[in-house]
Length: 226
Image: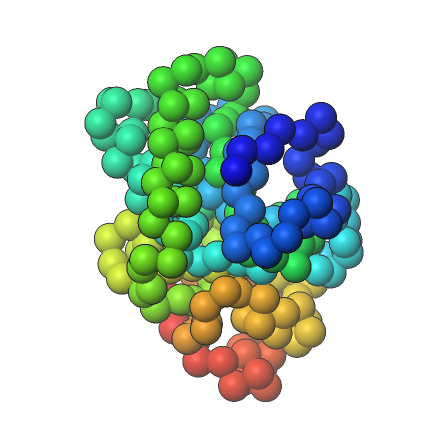
């Protein structure tokens, strides 16, 4: 089902109230950044900290890790097929809404020039349709990503080149505010069982590393440094 909203998607906190038995919500969205880098991106919505742009403070949506990987791979396939000069990337978990159903954003960015690029828009649309068609068909190892930049090239590459799917991703700037409760939430609010955490080790500030490891051990969540 295709639904058009008259409000900004980040404020669609009550979207699930209008539909019964939702299996997956994909927000097809514009993406904006100051760098204006041409980008096709995927991420789970939700707030690791305060709610600065929609959603509920300290609450993340349920992350559909395998569906996001399918979408990421489909975007890359479309990029190569159409010879688009765009980055394809995961983004860290950020902004609203904070939904109790599996939810993800598939975005075209990062400026009006790209928003009006019909070829790039077609790539996003095709990737979304492929994700919906293939929903539930694949199940690779699911992991939690921690560290690195908001657009994490390492995690993106791992998902594209190996049998691993990232659910929630906590970027470097959000790590200082992480506590056991939100880290537990990131693992529990993922569709699939989170097998381990992948740490972008160089992409975590030195003063945050030991406290992060302590939390991971407290939660008995295995981790790997990359």
